[in-house]
Amino acid sequence: MNTNTTINPSHGLAADFAARVRVIAKLAMPVAVARTGMLVLVIVDTAMVGHFSSTELAYYGLGQAVFMVCMLIGVGMLIGTAVLCAQAVGAESQLECGVIWRVSAFHALALGGLFVLLAQGGGYLYQLFGYDEGLAQGAGGILVVLTYGLPGQLLFTASILFLEALNRPGPGLAIMIGANILNAAVNWLLIGGEIGWGGEGAAWATTAVRWLIAVAAVLYILSMKDAAIYNVAGPLHQVRILGRKLRRLGYPLGLAQGLESAAFASLTLFAGLLGAEAVGAFQIVMNLVASCFMAAIGVGTATAVHVGLAIGRGDQRQMMLSGWGGLFTIAIFMAVMAAVMALFPSQLVQIFTGDPVLLAIAVPTLFVAAATLITDGAQGVLMGALRGAGDVWIPSALHLCSFLLVMVPAAYGFAIWADIGTPGLMMGTFCGVTLAAVLLAGRFHLISKRPVRRL
Image (cartoon, rainbow, N blue to C red; front, side, top):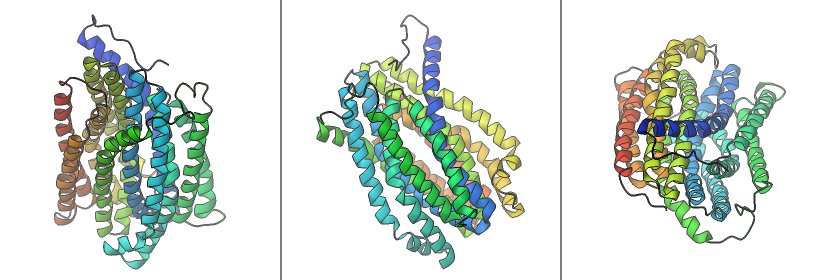
């Protein structure tokens, strides 16, 4: 298995940096496409529900917003899977990887089950926020159905993080391609075809697909030709130690991702204060922004893996170049996507809806959203670099300050107090992600100067 490109110490800094960018991009592309596949499940649901009914789109958007908080808390708790496996591979301790995966899988199922229980009171949550009973019950019903698929989604996440740490992103990509084809077909049947369940039909379709991809990923790992090398079904040694390491990484990352996603979910809830049409329009914009951010997830994961490999080998220089190489890679990509979004906002929104009211709200909002892409991608990748180095608590605190103390109040101020509407929500987002990028860049600069040490 070739997990890294050999760097000749006699090469210049520019050549070494270019080598880092190449290996990160090579791993990041399939990872990003696989992560985009996860989001495409939501995008297809949103588009098909939006063409079925604007009211059902509002239900689905509100239910999805809270579900994403739960999912991202779970994903954050599991991110240590890739970090610990990458560092183990770098240190030539491959037998630890299978134990890490199985410990992570257990945590995934337990977390998913917990969120299923919590979601049962979803309707009351929306009523507490001030929505009318019809909107609250519609969103709450969709939230419950979506969380039934969360244990499967998290088990799949644990499995592909394990595979990506071994530089094998292909299986996750292939599974997600099949999942999206199946999801679209079942959506047609359940949303408005033979059954006509609207947003709840989309939620049931996606829930079923999430369990299927979990089963597919587990079966692939158990059937790998070199499964014994990574101990995916052998003796469970150091379970408690590895479990503690996973949780030590997971607690701050889960908290950070949960509160970050809660911050973004609050923007959707703010949009609800502007009316049902504003919720639908803002959900469309957030889906387009999130589809671009999947590139940052891919590059961030690849950066975390290569930073982890370098730390496992005790190579500080390669660790530093991997972090800055990831930042350079995402900045170039996001600049291109920002240009596309700014030049063709109307065409992009029309993928989701032909409703002139939604178009009138979403198009100017998407134009503002284009300005957020570069720094949003930068902060995502820098978090990946820092977690690859095992630095999680301080970056998480910086992240949360940027989003909770800056982005949320700024978004509310622009959208509600200044009466700018949904474009104001994106103005607040720009403030938060830009501050996060600056703070995290400073933190990585500091960490990259310290001697490396494996977790």
